[in-house]
Length: 348
Image: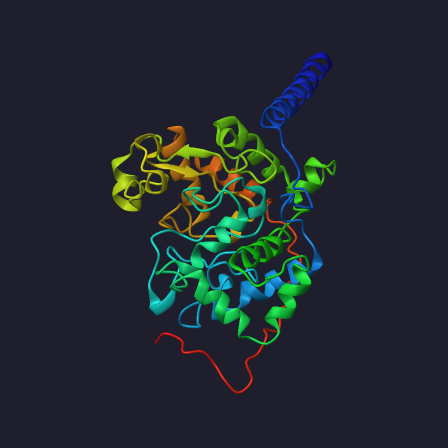
């Protein structure tokens, strides 16, 4: 009886070692990385305190819109998850866009911006919404610059941020300042980050199991790197057909990158979105058609991996994804430069 007990104990011990080896195998295969605490800046736009200050003010200023009602923060709320929790963001005159706003948190760790990747940098992305007729609705950037020059305080802020420029108030400098501010929007030190940095008590057993399952079923093939976005690579979506999901979520109606490039090869390709803070950024997918995290895990497994996950697998992956919620740097609402005794002829 004793020898049988010893054999049983040894088998359990060996099984535990094999299980841990399996977890380690998938951890290594997925190349888990902690999120950096600082984002790289381009050579022509080094980050300075003056640019960040100006960029934050511009980010919150609704006067960059034709109606004076919509700011960058309206759709990318940095007081929350960096987006607006809507399937389509509301722009000027209550118009609604066709895509869900991506989070601005950790966007500095993506090589391209927008769902279709049409902007190659944060600077280029910042220029787009201001003159988009559905979003902020300004006729052109010349009108924006004219407005900024007419607001006491802005010329001084631009001069401080771009002291080497003869005409510092410009479209390009406004975009550079907003991008500089956005590069400070980083959420490091999540439970996951602590775990991969050496604190093995940072994750629960279920989160560790979910981490293993995440890699094992293939999620990490696309959602890789420190931001879990393959640095903004493009992937076809959906990869597998499913008439039930297609009828319900209408994910193929948007042709993705094709709408920016008009190349047939780009049809239904989208930028891989970050999974950082994903528990806070519902609804999900480019069209915001999936409203819960467990459901989007099931949908993505079926449509991208051709897999039907077991209920426990979904729960474990969900627990792991919740460990990606990081620490948000405190945001203080900036005081906007005023226009004492006057205003602008905003579009009604």
